[in-house]
Length: 224
Image 1 (cartoon, helix red, strand yellow):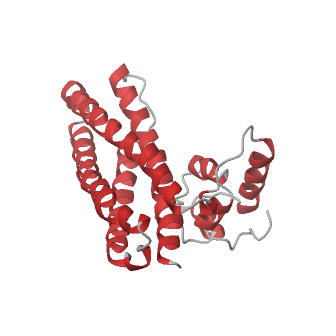
Image 2 (tube, one colour):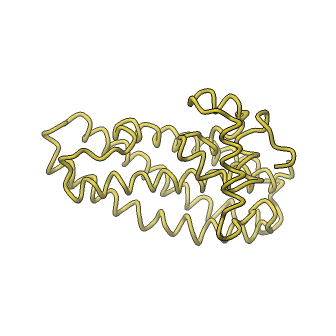
C-alpha cells in the first residue's frame, strides 16, 4: 500500500483503496463527512488498531474476487452517471419504502417505546425531506454544470451540497443511536426487523454516495 500509512486521511485511504470502505463501515468509522481525519485519529476514537486495519485492507485487496472500481481514475461524466444510476435511483425507491415501514412499526409497536419510535420516524422524515430536494438540485443544477465543463465555477452549489451532506450525516448518526446500532430486538416482527435492516443498508449506501461526491467528484470538479 504505497504512500498509505496512519497519517493518511480516511478519505484518501478509501479513494485509493476502495476495499477499505467495507472494513471502515464494519468499524463504524466515518469516511464521507469525516473523511478529512487522519486514520490514526479515527481508529483511536473507535478503539481500533490502525496497523491492524491497514492489514485488513491489504488482505481484502489480495483475496478479492473482482477488482473494485477506482472512481478517482474515471472521467467525471462516468462518475456522475454512476452516482445517478446507482445511488439516486436506489434512494428514490428506498426512501418511500422505509417511510411506510417506519410508520407501520410506530403504529403497531409505538406503545412499547413511544419516545424512541416517534423520534425515529421524525428523524427519518427529516432525512428524507433533505435528500429529496438535495438530489433534485444535483440533477438539475450541479451535475449539468460539471458535465458542461463549468465545474470550476461550481463552488457555491458545492458548498451547499457539502453542508447538506453534513446534515444528512448527523441524522444518520441519530438513526443509528435510536436503533442501538441496528441491533434487532428479539421481539421484533418481520416489518420491524426489515426496517432496522433497511436503515442500516441506507446508512451504508449514503456513506458510499457522499464519499464519492465529497472526496472525489467535488474536489476534481473544482480542480483542487
